[in-house]
Amino acid sequence: MLTQIRKRDGRIVKFRKEKIAAAILKAVEASGESDEKLSNEIAEKVIKEFEHKGKKFIPSIEQIQDTIEKVLVDEGHAKIAKAYILYRQKRAEIR
Image (cartoon, rainbow, N blue to C red; front, side):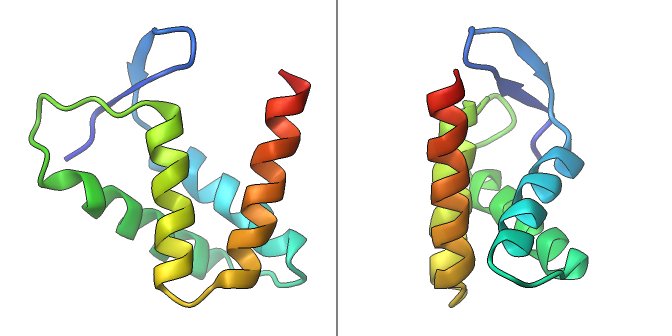
């Protein structure tokens, strides 16, 4: 179970599933859809991708984002994955 995440600046903070679901929802909406249930389902699948790594594993923001992309593609949501990738790229440019 994920309880912590490593931020870009190296800080370790409490993991919040709702933040992942919100980012996915933005991509869903950018792809022309609006499905909060789907966003939550994808977020759950992302979390499950990390469960086998053990309690001591603390993923980075980038690892979470890479996994979101992978899960979206694996689940057949290529259009949403593309929107997420573009959103991620835009955010990187802002930073």
